[in-house]
Length: 100
Image 1: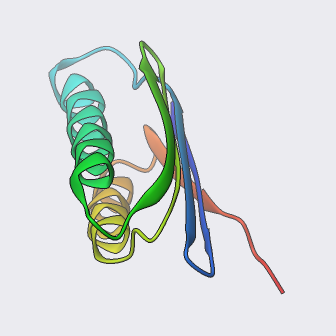
Image 2 (image 1 turned 120 degrees about the horizontal axis):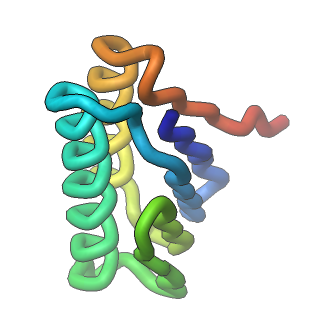
Image 3 (image 1 turned 135 degrees about the vertical axis):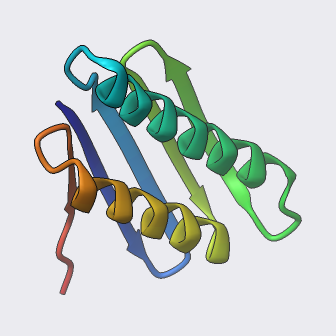
């Protein structure tokens, strides 16, 4: 199971993906898709002129990103991950932290 914890407060975005999907060709595609979208988000954050205070790490089974000023890229990736979670609910769960 892959769990994604994500939130956006003001201009600060936080993203954490942990875990792996179960074995099998379709399940492997879920891991690959999450890795590709998370990696693209980090690369975008590092290149975007409006993004600052970027902190990130990528290692097997865990991807983390925290930054300020990342709006459209964050929304795009979260929408893509939400579509994947809808199609593969037993392999991908997204938890968004509620804030007042």
